[in-house]
Image 1: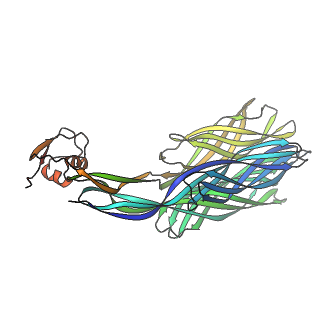
Image 2 (image 1 turned 135 degrees about the horizontal axis):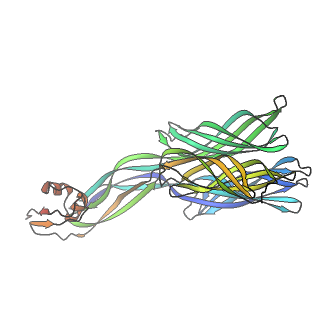
Image 3 (image 1 turned 90 degrees about the vertical axis):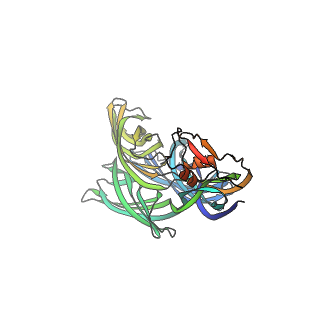
Length: 490
């Protein structure tokens, strides 16, 4: 019997690349009244990202808030900004591809250049690239014995949007110098026509109280909804939140001796989820008459199954860039941040903060680093979408020249389940099989063979094997003896 095949075709969207890139953005600050720079808070926001032939171009705006002491020792602040563009090359990229880019400030360096200061910021970009592709799979093969398996075919759906979060509160301070914040997504669900996002903003205010710096922390929960026309069924989604802008209006209430703060945070969201199509796929085939050459295709995706939230307290001896002794009076640990990498059972990295202290009547600052390693119970090994926020840092001098630090980490991990599907796309008929002419033969199987593997080796359908050997239990142990009957054909 000659072979006749029928294929089914369609399109799907998959992630084809994950690109990491870095660029250096410099901001020059010219002010002759600057005595010593105490703290610098860089904030970066994405303005554009688009794929081109073999390249992705992205741009953003960097703003730096600088806290310094003037010649009289008073704390002051200024803000400077700069726009930038950069690119990353990858041969797989094309103009039709969809990109999602998350920017972060990875390192800050301050150097004096004459009467000016130059702030150099290393801006990191994590770029996800998605592309549409054609999917063609074998639907039927008349003249061949096929194995069918139920499978889920996945296609990625990307979404993005913006929202605004407001909060009013009072703090025991005279003024706010730097409002630093990080946003985490603790839950993200797709509904009909929309994506619902819940999370928390971790706010760290470097403020002034009685003329001296203090650090005040606050957690602000939020819920947002952004439109997504393609969303139909309930799905868990991977989502990132980026703080595009922080607006703070601080008014001093002299009667209460406090500061009334009005906070407005502009959030930007990018994310993805996967639509599913359940179908029956041909994953293998053979013919009793002719040898077959099979062509295969495979698809891999990691849909989100759950967003897990962890709260971990880390502590220990920390490293400082400046030499601290008992003449130093600690005042505030500001601008906390966590840098980390994925480890075997969790994450490891360090918490950094800017320590402001008083020494001999002058306000000074130094960077403090607290290393940590945290095990995240129940986290899937395929999970790489992890975000961490620091909920306050406490630093004390354990002994002269030695400091201890303690911090609380809020960790959100989008737990993903790896989905791999392999299926037959085409069959080519080859040379004639060598047929055993004996009416009866005995086959000694290999240990671990299943029904399909046995049928394929014997060139008989699985139904034939079960009908002639009903006593067999699969997978086989290798000790069985299988009788193969071949009816006479004249």
